[in-house]
Image 1 (tube, rainbow, N blue to C red):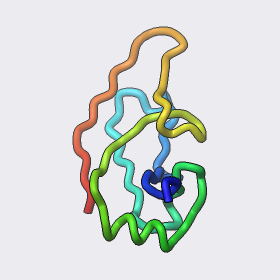
Image 2: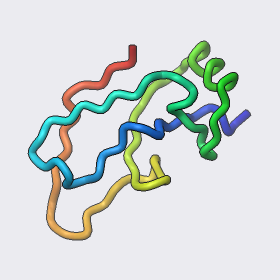
Image 3: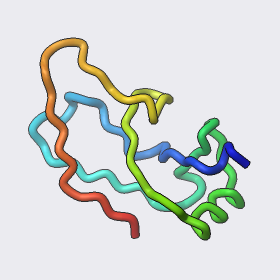
Length: 88
């Protein structure tokens, strides 16, 4: 069961630096085919159960297939500003 208590969206990624000084909108539907478990698996029944018993919603940032492990800079500085976050 522990595999299915955290989910990450497979769509909606952004390559850092590819749209500098731009406002981006990233939308990901709350459908099982767009989300994977903590181990990278799709499971429609478990995803539906999660939506029906939702406790918390958050955002993590990472790279490639390591969505929750953060990002880093090789050199220089960067700024990220989250303007809005909605779950509908």
